[in-house]
Amino acid sequence: MRVYDLRSDTVTQPTSAMRAAMLSAPADDDAYGDDVSVGRLEARVAALLGKPAAVWLPTGTMANQIAVALHCDRGTALASLPGAHVRIHEDASAAALWGVQIMPIGGRFGFDIEALDGLLDEEACGWPPVSLVWLENTLGEAGGAIWPLTTDQALAPGVDALQTVSAHVRAHGKAVHLDGARLWNAHVATGVPLAAWAETADTVSVAFSKGLGAPAGSILCGPTSLLARARRLKHGLGGAMRQAPALLAAAAEYALDHHVERLADDHRHARMLAAAISTLAHWEVAVPQTNLVLARVRPPLRRAEPLCAALRAAGIRCYPNIAREVRFALHLGIGDDDIEPIAQTIRSALGEDPTRFVDAQR
Ligand SMILES: *Cc1c(COP(=O)(O)O)cnc(C)c1O
Image (cartoon, rainbow, N blue to C red; front, side):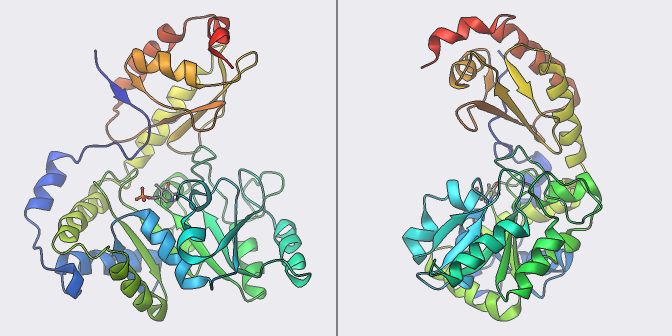
């Protein structure tokens, strides 16, 4: 049985060409800051994002946590979407490591300046001071939806364009961080240059381990003075991994050369899969904007896990995004010819009649 792993776009295997690039990379000690492979990648990504400085980090989680530390004093708050990675997937580290409280604002697809003003007004009435406003693009928890940059793009209700939000935050003298783990997808889907998105934020993190297909690694970009502190924090958190970053930087360089434009294939595959499974009575499927397909179970079903269990038994690895939803991630391990077999496996594993899953519902 062929197994298709659709749990995340992190599950990709490095291709043999990527492995070859890693093996032939010069590899010096990154803790001394003189490794040429890491240095070249940092300079390249800083230029792509239009920021003066960049630091390579082993994970996006570390990049985000360093961003929290750079911008926020203990006992202050950061404002983010309720479903932001930093709020729900980083084990409460903003609180645990830095004494920072996350204040959720907005909905699934973004927030508007009215929501932000609500929080800032309360700050004047004694709520924790907001030191940082947190953006994310694409929105992982919202199935890879794109938070639009400008007002001429369609905006969901209660969402302002990133340029509007950013100008408003800056007028209040607050800092902005953009978690751009999947910013590459927003760039490829819209054609908007990476630097235009990055311009809305003081610091930006981007990942090589999602759609770009490298084994690990992220980069944090921003002003030179902040990034000097970021390097010390990287060292303090145990992120200066000697010769290993050189190999991972070589994988990232390879990915920048070969795996950015191909993200359009993942987006097309996501639309194909969504169309194929939207005919099933089990769930409601949104039209994907990028590489993630969100399928929400329809009543009388209330939990997606029993469906996921049936899919796993049939060779489709997946798990609930939230209790009522499955998220299928498309990535470079899935080709044009895989979509129909995947859709067919899903159809036959679930069958026509959703009610047979009702008994398994709590
Ligand atoms: C995956 C992800 C991260 C964390 O990246 P890791 O390298 O897995 O730690 C941060 N933010 C977003 C939006 C992500 O999707």
